[in-house]
Amino acid sequence: MSTKPVIAIDGPAASGKGTLARRVAQAMGYALLDTGALYRAVGLSMIRAGQDVRDVEAAMAAAQALDADRIAELTADPALRQDETAQAASIVSAYPGVRQALLEFQRGFAANPPGGAAGAVLDGRDIGTVICPNAPVKLFITASVEVRAERRFRELGGDTAGVDFAAVLADMRARDERDTTRAFAPLVPAEDAVVLDNSELGPDAAFQAAMDVIRAKL
Ligand code: DC
Image (cartoon, helix red, strand yellow):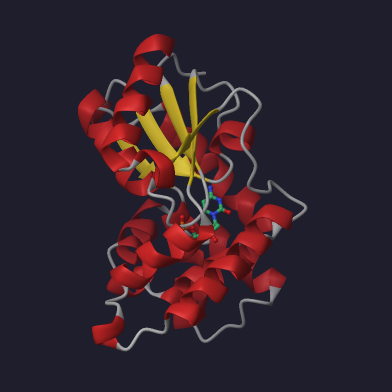
């Protein structure tokens, strides 16, 4: 077991937890792992191989085949951020075999943060509940589904890029539904997590609130 501190940051899609996690990692000088990128990497490798993401066995094999080099390659691919990849990630992340295959990589990162960093920030859905249940700091970042869909709509280029807001909102609801209702490691705040609402606080106040929690706990 590592004695290096872990900051767990969980929350739904487009809640702003990724941005918050980056700022916290930078402020603390900790290594950062975006765990959603791992599930996206599984989805993307299946899409690239022409596989059906509903094929549970193939998804498990794809997750097991990911090593650090392949993860680095796939997470640098611009297609990682596309909506098709997000939907694929949301589907494969419901499979226990896929989650199990990615568990050791995540725990290894937390125990031995790369570059000799003094600690690790992991952002995802189940960091505080499953991956690092003993993390000394657990934050759960929320925002209303409308605020999150608006954010994703802007990220995708908005009206000028011909993006349909209603479709983005529907996709966000579908993803929330899958992420929160799956039987295995559903998206729920850990009992000892501090919940911060980004739509009420705004990103700067959420960052300050997060740093206050971190200072109080570490
Ligand atoms: O945060 P994101 O949009 O990159 O996540 C992509 C998908 O991966 C999301 O639908 C849920 C899943 N995921 C998960 O199940 N567990 C995590 N720790 C991180 C992401």
